[in-house]
Length: 204
Image: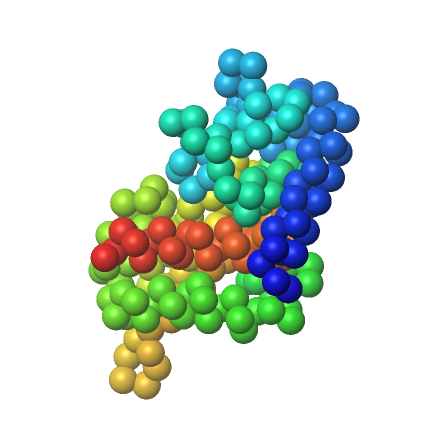
């Protein structure tokens, strides 16, 4: 798909999402996504960064007032459209266990966990430092595991296994089992990719 066609498709998706959500009450949108009230608007955190939605046009802005790009806006709007308010269970599943996730599992692993390990040089201590610096909470999984509150009701986990003489280091992004109730597989892939990108950036 050409860039112009992609942008037009994204714009149609955004318009449809805004129309669907604006037909609800703001109380229902808050319930669905675990949002907070922000003056006349609504707020949430995405990977530790605060964003606000104006109501009812649902324009998304950063804390500095900058309008978010469309790819990020549709991610957040999809989260609110699909969300049913289910709380996280802290039961973790792999990408292949998400609805429609099995087909894209290998590709997702390549640009998420595999790239993270590669750019950190397989250094588990570098991973621990990076995870702590972006708000990860340690959990007992693998040789190093951390949970990140990616969205209010969609936590992610990354599990790191240290390498040895036989096997290289490996890292995998895991999803709370309710994640598929909030975002489709492509949106969750983007969320996981954004988390790994944040970790790589900090580690540099």
